[in-house]
Length: 210
Figure 1 (cartoon, rainbow, N blue to C red):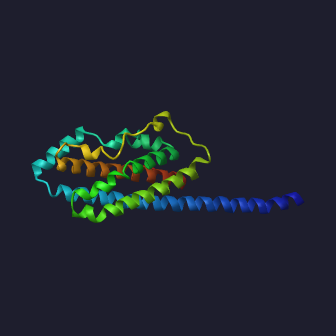
Figure 2 (figure 1 turned 90 degrees about the vertical axis):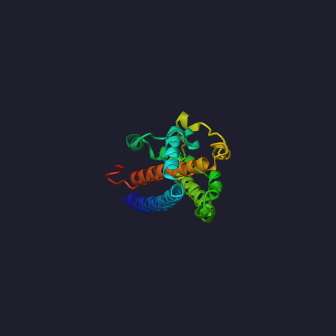
Figure 3 (figure 1 turned 30 degrees about the vertical axis):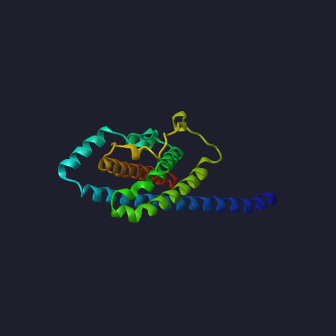
């Protein structure tokens, strides 16, 4: 009986520590989701503002080109639809999100080339991407329990980020800027989706459907 009483404080401390870790994990997820939501909204506004400077025919033509083209981050293997996203593990979604954010650390510095809105927000975007990358890295460490398990496809290296968008379209700054903004918006939407699903899974909510 004495041994049982001795074990009770240990179990209580362990329970409190576990609850504290879970609360801290949710806090980090909340921060990460809020930050990527802000980035996605900012990317959407920047893209819409840029589109607003184009003629209708020019906008349609660029959209057709973009649908046939691809983003630098398309080299990152990621879920292709909602069903695949739902089936992906929390750790996999976090790793993909990390790589997507990382792929924009350099290109985000060139977002200032397109219009005045981007000039005002370019430094803010770079800082928020860096902060989000650090936050996702903390979530990865908290989710992997000391064991790093990645698919073979996840270990592939991306091409250099820096020159890809700068070389788009030859001497066409309009096409380069259009694709830069369209890809940024697309990738921030992906990260927002992946982090939202991962956060839901960690909160043990009954329904995490998209």
